[in-house]
Length: 234
Image 1 (spheres, rainbow, N blue to C red):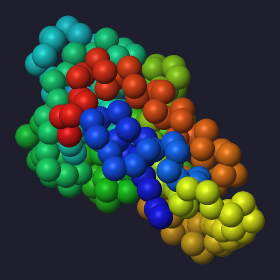
Image 2: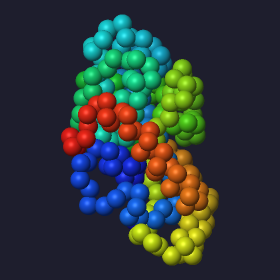
Image 3: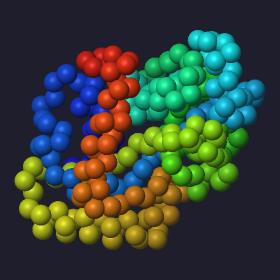
Image 4: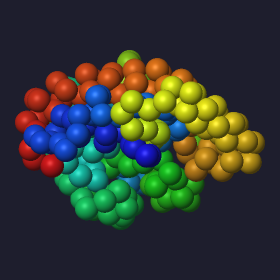
């Protein structure tokens, strides 16, 4: 089955799951990273990440940022930014990524964090200003937009990822074969171009790599979820 980064976060925010995240599945492969992007209205006074952070510190709780829901990777991307910089921004929860995007494009909210594929058309059209992407590396299809890490928040990295899991106890040879097929499919130039043009980053590794990613994500988000008291709130 296809899973997203919420698979790791669910372990932390839901009190009762009908499965054990780390024990009831067999990791096969991660497929892509989907970076998020920090947005402000096109006429915003903030030209870069650190200007925004500084302004939020000078006027605590005046600025707010929109996001697509409680405990989503986009929400936690904002909370990690606050934790790493001391920024003071209230969060506004919308029903989805597109609703948050519409509000920042319209200037109804000062900041929003959205997925790159969801926001790319508005960014390309000059309807909103992108201050930085949340991924470790720049997004090729977004040209010169820097990462948040290189903008002054060293070590910052958040992406929504997608991958493939199999059932518990899956035959190792089947895991190896499917992983190899995924590598082949993602290496197709046409398919790869479609994904990268949308703003995704192809990232296929071994089953062990994917298992390590899930475990590291749980450990990464545990203190943030605990500090925000999100367990049982989703």
